[in-house]
Amino acid sequence: MAERRLAERPAMQLVGLDEDATDAPPPVRSAPEHLHDVATGARSWASRRPAVASVVTVAVLALVAGVALAGPRWLTERERAAVLGPAAFVGAVATLRTIPEATWTADVNGTTAPVLVGDVLVASAGSVRHRDRRIVGLDAISGALRWTVPLGTDPQPDAIDCHPTGEVVSCLAGPAPTPDPRDLAQVPDGEVGVATLWAIDPVHGVVRSTHPVPGWIQSSAAAGSDLVVAAYAHGRLSVSRIEPVSGRQVWQTQRFATAGTTINGRIRLVVARALVMATDNDSTLLLDAATGERQTHATDTLGIDQTRLAANGTVVRTQFRLRGPVIVASSSLSDGMGEPWLTAEGSVLSVDVSDGSSGLTFTSDGFGLDGVRAYRPGADQQVWQTPTQATRVSVDASDRVVVRNGGTVAGLAAEDGGVVWVRDLGAVSGPTVSDGRRVAVLSGGIDERPVLVALDLADGTLEWRLPLPAGTSRLVQLGTQLYAIGDERLVALR
Image (tube, rainbow, N blue to C red; front, top):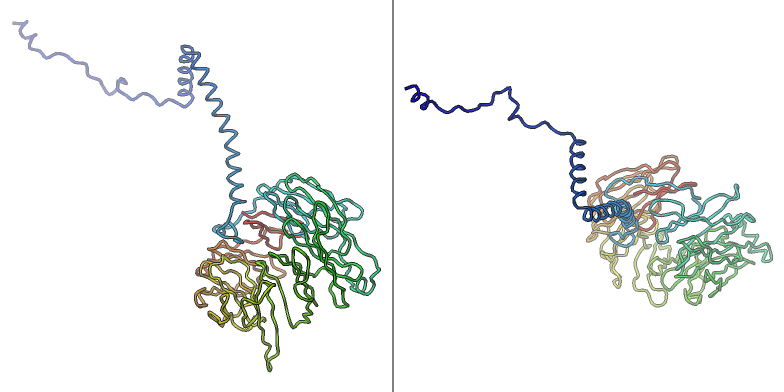
């Protein structure tokens, strides 16, 4: 009986209690403990397979070394591509989407315009007072000094002008012109300044050659791989084309200076396509860039007629005539060789930035009092006219024509000239920059800190404002990037 009752009892089972830790989750292990377990397992595995372990170790070390070396290089190349890469169109900046930041600063002499040659910014540094005038090459990405070319101590050059010319950068360094025209025009045998032409390898800063250039240098400009120089000597204005490395004079054209001729550095020298134009206060020389032959006789402007050479090679001639009580301007545009391809009423307005999409030429009365007219090549009838006053066209891109008159900036529709937006920015100076979607101008009076103001090109909305860095007063565009420059500082804005 007792045995039967024992058999009917249910089997006993172990039941875990709350205070038992047998079913509790394992404690969280720390990172060093995990690392120790992995290292122990790796050592155990390596002891069992030493040959395979050696191969894997070498591969891992090579991978780590490759990442360590390639990582910074990849970042540098990416930054280099961003700085040196193309913009939306020729003449545009890379981007104005965000407020630029100062990425590097260099000590330069602001009297010399810096130039971009490849990935090197060429500028001048030092001063005559400290007798340390020199030409420097700065890395365009980091601002690091790549090379220095001292210009000697006897004599110290007052004026330095540099231009990229083929495989070298050509720099003219010499004395500043005398401010008194009587010292040259009326005294042909008087003292003549002598400048030095330096041909420098822009990559390594190696001086390829130096050559004396006689005369008081007024202006210079690149013509392909050659340099065109305008200078005064012995009562004559001479314009010469020179091979920088050999020093060979390709051609020279001279004309006698007059008592009214400016010899204080105000000659404007422009080289565009097949033409060279030298302009001062009282005359204009238009020359064939290949031969130096005059395309027209030297014209006496006398404040009545004006001739200028645009960057695209177009010769613009403007005549001012008194018609009753009103001064009337008319302009003709040509290639300088043949008949005009456009005759328009008014004075042709300069355009700071253009993507070429509208194909329009813009004129005003020459004084910014009349409205703006738009013309197309080959048709003398205007496309449209607006009463909006303007002295220059800031931007012609993305179906907008942004015009400027004093501190007022207006956005017009490229199709019909209708006013889309108007902004009053106070005092505005310098040229305009644009990335094709925004426009930026430098605002601020003489005693005020200049501020770079960016507006939306479509509707004129204020995008951002950036006071220029301390020690800088103006803006320059080199390639597709912006730089703030002052008397002694150059700041890269990215």
